[in-house]
Length: 335
Image 1 (cartoon, one colour):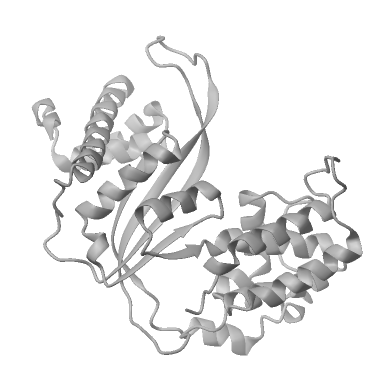
Image 2 (cartoon, helix red, strand yellow):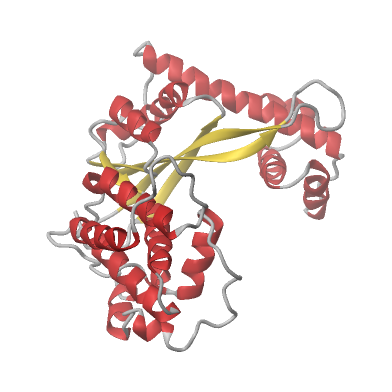
């Protein structure tokens, strides 16, 4: 790394970059100071930007070499099981080169891909027919949905109502079966690619990283993403022979919001969510869709041309029906 001339070891530079990526530069300088590395916020910012520029240049060089068919794997051994996970987020940016302060602030979408090699066994049958225990915990699920998609009402109570868990069908036997699953895949190596570019430009960057890690020759390959159309354009364009899988966390959010929209007591809503989640987890997406459409018929579809509120029950049900309907082929989770 070219930063050797600044007198910092690789470990120190890694600490600086990690702190700068999580905190403000002032807070990052204080944090690394606690580790015995004295550095000013301005100098830390300068080093972080240099490292970022180097990594971005290396990322772009891999994409260019791949396009020219000159990119060679940088790993000694082809991984057996791999996954490429793609998602987008929102962040606020400001114009560079304008001096201290925030200039021309605007929200933009960032795109991030995690490329993971795994140790994972093969099975003739689904080794975990029950959903993960964490998706059967009322308070945790409600907090997750609120953070990812939003949910009306007060914050979740400090303790879930006593009648929620039993009514939610999260029976002790089901929880025990899920917790006893001993063969969960083990993550080996993870690298990430990030950009503010559009999906057409982002796809080659992810493909370059995947080829450099020899992902295309792995025996088992998966591509995991939200249901956004651009994610599947990347999959079709650069990872067509990877198994396409919709991220279950997003499915969970749509199901929970739809269960809330149907109404009833808290225990009834929770039981409905768990039933739908279990159905999707076990590959019975068509059954869940049918139940959602029945409820949609009872409540009514969103009136054409009318803008409904963000938490209107008709809107939430329509969103769940659309999401599952569009992504059902990518939701064969047992397989």
